[in-house]
Image 1 (tube, helix red, strand yellow):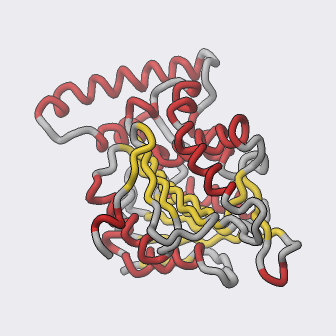
Image 2 (spheres, rainbow, N blue to C red; image 1 turned 135 degrees about the horizontal axis):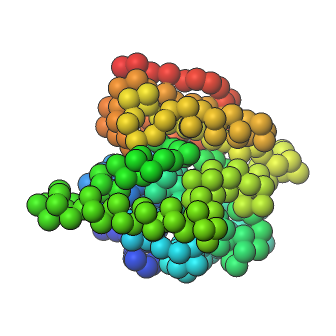
Length: 297
């Protein structure tokens, strides 16, 4: 595949869209990356999706500290281009026999926050209905969050230059103090609660229509949670609790647990298992969730 076919079109700040030359109507992967993710790391995932789902568009939403600590209205205004891109993909299925195949892939709480704001804007403004979802992949989250884990995640996203080493800690403490003050005063709900609830809210996501002989039936949402006991940013029990909550709603859930990989770094150490998990969510035939699917490689 030539480089020109892999070009993403910029829709807005930190939002871009890849459209394959022969795209299939209604097929979309929404990739919401972690705070400060480098392009070279993001490319690993987009390349795998281009290999696995060659007919699907890829909507890339990158996460950065300034947008994460902005007010919810500002975040939802910024996510509008992504919401309209999703609407355009759904519109491709209108009047046809095609059903949407939309996969949402989030990383850490930064990416999950992007997904949350997208789902809320789709429900309240663009679709005025929940998003029909084929599947969800949660990498290294969603976490319940604590002050120090939020601090560490923000510090990890900053540039590794001299200025950041000296100014970064103070700036992050100021940002978090303001955020937690707003939460304590009731100006905002706790972001971690919002993102954990929204992903499973029947008002924001719904089962998609069936296909083939089962056209009249809705297909359960598939979900895979990828996490590690060695992750110092996220408590692995936070992830398994969210997976259990998804199961309680009738989702088909699997868990890919590792013992040795760090935060949002599972693909580099366990590419085969990670790619197979992606394929299980996307594939046309059946999916059987299970717990846990473990690797100790």
